[in-house]
Image (tube, rainbow, N blue to C red; front, top):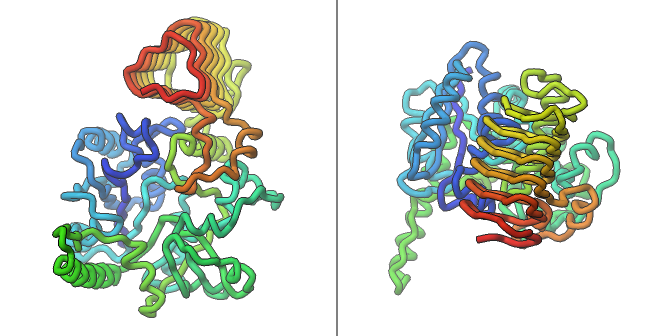
Length: 456
């Protein structure tokens, strides 16, 4: 197998729904379950190597490359069989434009027989090995990870419900499809017969037909070299449209033909082109890191995976002070009297005072939590200082999740941002302050209680 990998990491103009957390850390580098999100992907890629060096390209548009340079240096130490390189787009080129722009870098040496493309903000069990085996077995040109749409009906509980075959609290399935790429595939051979991005039409009729699977685009693909032909055709077609548009556009606003979307400009044409276009169906947990609340979803998932796989190196040893699962680097405490967990990730150099209680949280590096403080359902960024007798509390629970699951925003994500606390970098919380279901932007000082607010 000659495999290369591209991870699409977005850019400074994307990931706006992840703010304010992305204000100081690119979304794919945000720490979840003890390490950057992208490291969970790279670890799975490294397991494919079996002694063979795998080239991984991080493809995106960021002007500040220092965080990625630091990440790549650390990743190379940890994953010796993975060679990671950052490819900087000259501007944001879409999910397909960068692939075509860097085609010589990716395909030019002639060694790439299979290209694994991954959206860097997805959270799942990353079935890369199974996907590639399916691709090879079917002699495919293209394979896309297809997600069971039931997984998107109730993301907080769906993983358990899929496994236990229990009932779902479901909002409109048509609304679900309208937020994602949707594919129709034969159940008999998994060949895709139709692809549409964020459809507005009803797909329930296909769900009732037993010969078809209706699935969601899971953001993971395996391509052969023929993808370049489709990208070239897409660029040529878009270039022609741009020239026509420029001739009739009185305001002289140009459209860039180099900005290509895999979903809009390529995938929807593959079934018609008689391309060997298949889907690999997954019934496992799948989520997209879009908003801060999704970081807590992801943290729970990855910690649960560590626990399920009995990864003792990843999790702190359970005790009367540690309720598993907890992922913790070395942290300092002035007392034996504290309780941490479950579902807590602690960064480096975290200082915990006497009588502290922490649960369902992501705590980043260099955070200080004073004596007798309580922190729950929260994301605490770097360098935050929390005083004594503070209460930092979100209401991210089964009850609030079930209540809010039907309150879907226009972008398809739940209004659960109201049910967590986010303290951004260098926030200082004074003694005895209560922060409840609020978002606090960087470099703020809280001297009074804050409830249901965004502190700018």
